Image (cartoon, rainbow, N blue to C red; front, side, top):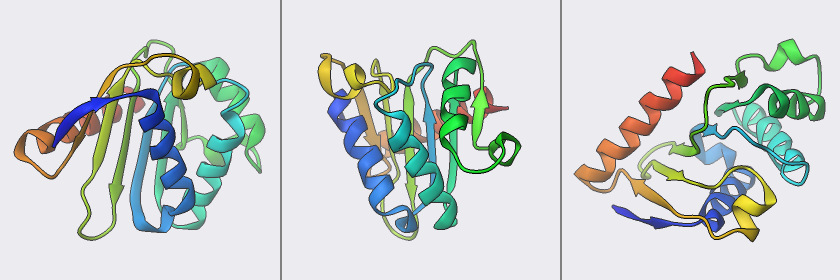
Length: 151
């Protein structure tokens, strides 16, 4: 399935991942900008994903990565495969892959991981799930893209 998405959909995706990381096998986020309002939620997500044995990776700018690493417990080196710096990335893409029979979901959007991006601004994007052939292609392409920019 493919449909139009907003910043609120990104917020809901993050909230779902925070609430039930045990139901997910992987979470991948890609956004150059993270603001102070979302840093604690993303740190909570990183810790919850690790405890639930769920893969978690975020690709972001150096400044945002530094700010996020300051919120995470332990030394930054512990999180080096989780928080990936890529200052060339301007893309905003979000992906969750469930355990078992659920459908993976990808959102490609204009929404950064900022309060404006997920709640204040009028953002536009596309959400796809693996529930259709076209959706599977989009989800696969997003997964491949995030893998490339995280390398």
